[in-house]
Image 1: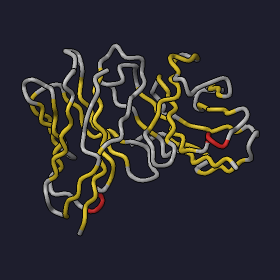
Image 2: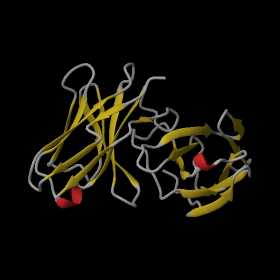
Image 3: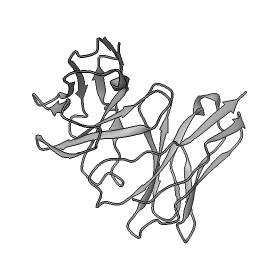
Image 4: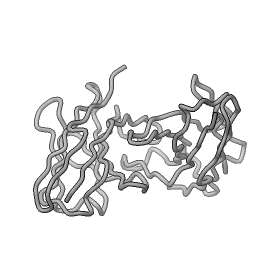
Length: 116
Length: 111
């Protein structure tokens, strides 16, 4: 069964450093998403991406965040200058189409980011 | 998007049937009801989706009464590996792609 993969599984960084989290969505999916989950809290939507542009973003997704699909397979989340409060599990997801409540989103295993 | 209410936690024993009920009093006509499961340190995983009456797959059943103001996820004969957080989500095709997760129900299955 095809699955979403994410690298790295864990990332430790110093406050103020840039990090890039990588995802390989399922190959025939067209819509891509990033979510985050702070330890012990809810899964929160960050951004959705389609046709090489952002479809929607949440209030969390400020100017420090950016997403990119640099090639036909990877989907990346960049945090330009990390803050302590960016420490969380970051999940990538993909779906075939946008009707998200009717269309299953497939989540990756996540990247645990720790900002020191 | 319809707001959902579900129990914070539930306990069960191996082999029992578990029913988790979700309330969504202001569900709209076009809204579907979707349940996701999340194991510790993993991403959420789709379990089941329905619009009305009953839906069954190899993992669970979903019961939706006629008024659609609630739904019940039924897990038959749970095992220890079913210990997870279960999320009820309600929304329609008009939404822009983001899933809105609540706090979910933390199910603990004991031996």
